[in-house]
Image (cartoon, rainbow, N blue to C red; front, side, top):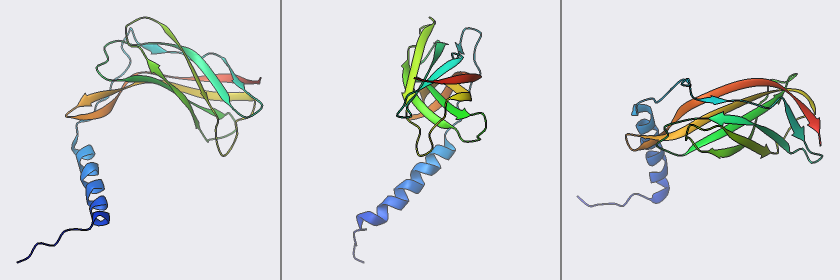
Amino acid sequence: MSFRPVPRPALRPALTAAAALLLLAAPAVTATAGPSESVTVDPVGRVAADGTVTLSGTYRCTGNSGPAFVSSSVGNKSSTTRHGIGGTRAVCDGAEHRWVNTGKPAPDPVEPGAARVEATVMELRPAGGLPLPYFHAAAEQDVTLTAS
Protein backbone atom coordinates (compact mmCIF):
# COMPACT_ATOMS: atom_id res chain seq x y z
CA MET A 1 0.00 0.00 0.00
CA SER A 2 1.46 3.36 -0.96
CA PHE A 3 0.74 6.79 0.46
CA ARG A 4 -0.57 9.38 -1.96
CA PRO A 5 -0.59 13.01 -0.80
CA VAL A 6 -3.92 14.79 -1.08
CA PRO A 7 -3.71 17.90 -3.28
CA ARG A 8 -4.20 21.13 -1.31
CA PRO A 9 -7.31 22.29 -3.24
CA ALA A 10 -9.06 19.08 -2.11
CA LEU A 11 -8.34 19.94 1.55
CA ARG A 12 -10.15 23.27 1.47
CA PRO A 13 -13.74 21.83 1.26
CA ALA A 14 -12.92 19.27 3.95
CA LEU A 15 -11.56 21.91 6.32
CA THR A 16 -14.54 24.18 5.65
CA ALA A 17 -16.94 21.33 6.44
CA ALA A 18 -15.05 20.49 9.64
CA ALA A 19 -15.17 24.13 10.78
CA ALA A 20 -18.91 24.28 10.08
CA LEU A 21 -19.48 21.13 12.15
CA LEU A 22 -17.49 22.63 15.04
CA LEU A 23 -19.64 25.76 14.93
CA LEU A 24 -22.83 23.69 14.92
CA ALA A 25 -21.62 21.61 17.86
CA ALA A 26 -20.53 24.64 19.91
CA PRO A 27 -22.86 25.77 22.67
CA ALA A 28 -25.02 28.78 21.85
CA VAL A 29 -24.26 31.91 23.84
CA THR A 30 -27.12 34.38 24.11
CA ALA A 31 -28.25 37.01 26.56
CA THR A 32 -30.77 39.70 27.13
CA ALA A 33 -29.78 43.13 28.33
CA GLY A 34 -29.27 43.31 32.06
CA PRO A 35 -30.75 46.21 34.02
CA SER A 36 -27.45 48.09 33.78
CA GLU A 37 -26.91 47.49 30.04
CA SER A 38 -28.44 49.57 27.25
CA VAL A 39 -27.96 51.06 23.81
CA THR A 40 -29.71 54.11 22.38
CA VAL A 41 -29.92 55.66 18.92
CA ASP A 42 -29.98 59.43 18.40
CA PRO A 43 -33.18 60.55 16.62
CA VAL A 44 -31.26 62.28 13.81
CA GLY A 45 -28.59 60.76 11.53
CA ARG A 46 -26.72 62.26 8.58
CA VAL A 47 -26.28 61.37 4.92
CA ALA A 48 -23.36 63.10 3.16
CA ALA A 49 -23.42 64.08 -0.52
CA ASP A 50 -21.30 60.99 -1.36
CA GLY A 51 -23.84 58.67 0.36
CA THR A 52 -21.89 58.16 3.59
CA VAL A 53 -24.25 57.65 6.55
CA THR A 54 -23.38 58.66 10.13
CA LEU A 55 -25.38 57.25 13.05
CA SER A 56 -24.82 57.79 16.77
CA GLY A 57 -26.14 57.16 20.25
CA THR A 58 -25.07 55.92 23.67
CA TYR A 59 -24.36 52.53 25.22
CA ARG A 60 -23.64 50.98 28.58
CA CYS A 61 -22.41 47.40 29.14
CA THR A 62 -20.63 45.39 31.82
CA GLY A 63 -18.67 42.21 32.22
CA ASN A 64 -17.10 41.45 28.87
CA SER A 65 -14.44 38.75 28.57
CA GLY A 66 -13.87 39.24 24.84
CA PRO A 67 -13.86 42.17 22.41
CA ALA A 68 -17.17 44.08 22.33
CA PHE A 69 -18.62 46.30 19.60
CA VAL A 70 -21.57 48.59 18.90
CA SER A 71 -22.91 47.74 15.46
CA SER A 72 -25.66 49.53 13.58
CA SER A 73 -27.80 49.12 10.50
CA VAL A 74 -30.18 51.45 8.69
CA GLY A 75 -32.93 51.20 6.14
CA ASN A 76 -35.30 53.74 4.64
CA LYS A 77 -38.81 53.34 6.05
CA SER A 78 -40.17 52.51 2.59
CA SER A 79 -37.65 49.65 2.08
CA THR A 80 -37.10 46.23 3.63
CA THR A 81 -33.37 46.42 2.85
CA ARG A 82 -30.96 47.05 5.77
CA HIS A 83 -27.41 48.35 5.40
CA GLY A 84 -24.69 47.77 7.98
CA ILE A 85 -23.18 51.07 9.07
CA GLY A 86 -19.77 50.62 10.66
CA GLY A 87 -18.86 49.32 14.07
CA THR A 88 -17.36 50.92 17.15
CA ARG A 89 -15.25 49.15 19.76
CA ALA A 90 -17.18 49.13 23.05
CA VAL A 91 -15.77 49.58 26.56
CA CYS A 92 -17.90 47.49 28.94
CA ASP A 93 -17.05 49.20 32.23
CA GLY A 94 -20.60 50.04 33.35
CA ALA A 95 -20.29 53.73 32.39
CA GLU A 96 -22.34 55.38 29.64
CA HIS A 97 -20.35 56.00 26.45
CA ARG A 98 -21.12 57.61 23.07
CA TRP A 99 -20.87 55.64 19.85
CA VAL A 100 -20.63 56.98 16.29
CA ASN A 101 -20.68 54.67 13.26
CA THR A 102 -20.05 55.76 9.69
CA GLY A 103 -20.41 53.77 6.48
CA LYS A 104 -21.37 54.02 2.84
CA PRO A 105 -24.17 51.61 1.85
CA ALA A 106 -23.66 49.91 -1.49
CA PRO A 107 -24.95 49.26 -4.04
CA ASP A 108 -28.15 51.10 -3.08
CA PRO A 109 -27.73 54.44 -1.29
CA VAL A 110 -29.85 55.46 1.68
CA GLU A 111 -31.87 58.61 1.06
CA PRO A 112 -32.44 61.47 3.52
CA GLY A 113 -35.79 61.22 5.28
CA ALA A 114 -37.51 58.74 7.57
CA ALA A 115 -35.45 55.64 8.40
CA ARG A 116 -35.26 52.77 10.86
CA VAL A 117 -31.99 52.10 12.75
CA GLU A 118 -30.97 49.04 14.74
CA ALA A 119 -28.05 49.22 17.18
CA THR A 120 -26.55 46.27 19.04
CA VAL A 121 -23.85 45.89 21.69
CA MET A 122 -22.29 42.52 20.95
CA GLU A 123 -19.28 40.76 22.40
CA LEU A 124 -17.21 37.96 20.86
CA ARG A 125 -17.07 35.82 24.01
CA PRO A 126 -14.72 32.81 24.12
CA ALA A 127 -16.74 29.59 24.52
CA GLY A 128 -15.07 26.23 24.10
CA GLY A 129 -12.20 27.81 22.18
CA LEU A 130 -14.45 29.61 19.69
CA PRO A 131 -15.49 33.28 19.84
CA LEU A 132 -19.29 33.26 19.89
CA PRO A 133 -21.63 36.28 19.89
CA TYR A 134 -23.00 37.41 23.25
CA PHE A 135 -25.54 40.23 23.04
CA HIS A 136 -25.44 42.83 25.81
CA ALA A 137 -28.14 45.19 24.47
CA ALA A 138 -30.15 45.98 21.33
CA ALA A 139 -32.49 48.77 20.25
CA GLU A 140 -34.53 49.85 17.23
CA GLN A 141 -35.35 53.50 16.61
CA ASP A 142 -37.17 55.50 13.96
CA VAL A 143 -34.86 58.33 12.94
CA THR A 144 -34.67 61.19 10.48
CA LEU A 145 -31.69 61.19 8.14
CA THR A 146 -30.70 64.71 7.16
CA ALA A 147 -28.52 65.71 4.22
CA SER A 148 -25.17 67.09 5.34
